[in-house]
Length: 168
Image (tube, rainbow, N blue to C red):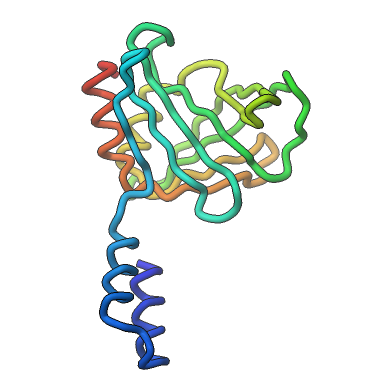
């Protein structure tokens, strides 16, 4: 909605916005934020999105053979966290939607080679339900300091693909 509003405001302020530029902005606003693809080796699904602001990305995976069943998440390039290989910390994944806000805690471990924080266990099936129907995912540390926010547009399709392929 914000992009649509901004595009409308820009057109009201200047006549220089072409119809093609407006269509591009509208297409960007409607395109999914989450990408999902089927992996063949190992057989499973990988998903990914960029944070609303900042350099952080969040990726997820399920695999039918290599991983324990469930959605495994990895936070990449989060700003403001100590970069100490092997450091563990609890992160809070808060999903907000028409149902209110649901929170899920998970332990993450920093891996220096990829500048990433993979989860040490899969997130709960309840998280996948909230992820699928929510509108916003906020990741915070235990103290409540926000690390990154992710729009969940496209998460429904990503979750459905994971349920079908990985039988979640």
